Image 1 (cartoon, rainbow, N blue to C red):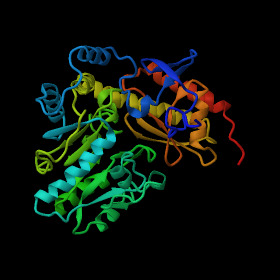
Image 2: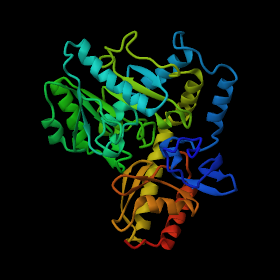
Image 3: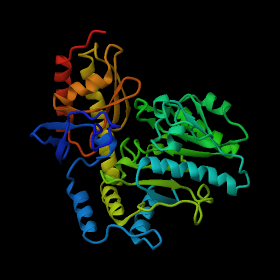
Length: 396
């Protein structure tokens, strides 16, 4: 057999972690990396956080899984905490970000069916977005690399330019159900939407009887300095997809919705075998114990400003490599110059003991655990600067 046991859909690098402590990962041969990738914005409390680990261990020894045919005291408690800390009135728990976006899409379409407008099925989405790898979520994005080999795509999505309110307005038809947008595009290159754009989408949705759905899978759960990024725009969505950091490393997601938006999600319209299992709920509760706190969130904002300022100062010493810094909170991106291929540079950093993530628009994502210290910020910038000083741009 020539195919490996692990299906080869990932171009796996030579970083092979076997242990984590705080913001550090350790390899099978004793290597050490400062992890400012956080499992792509997942390990928001770093590795081996005692409260999170303890909650999972305790629940694993008590009850891991039961069917959603039964009552769920754990799910009810967890959902109530999210409701109490957000715009939402109700929550459906999933196992991943893609599943959360799927539920968001279904909620938006089902709303119009029960509202007497079953023809309203089209969802306006935005170019360079990433919503997941299922058939619906790749269809919701305009990226050819996600579509290749999986056609026919699911109909019902219209793509327009991100942060272009006029284009969004022009795309509205009698078949439009709503908008689906990332307040901060992650895979697309750490691109925060403008205030005018987010406010405008909310106003357009209200004017035309549409729903505003947010994909906060990557930017949500305290990453930008508020529990969800929409708070910083002074708006509220109708539906929101959450995942990644929600379980701190345990696979779990959630679709949050207002009572009005969820009026179509009745018995039998949706389901999940594993969604909302007691073990996942214990992880979410533990994460919320830490991050759903204004002092913690203020700390994320302060550390984000400190990291951004340090990066902006550092990149001036390497103008041949770095162009600019952007993002919100501890969801930052460093745009590389056109002379540099970001994936090559990120690969180089791994050999220098530093983990970051490549993104679109030639951007290096900087996604540290949210509980890093000032010392970790200084260490990251020092390692990055030292690596940059040694990096040789390949001839093209």
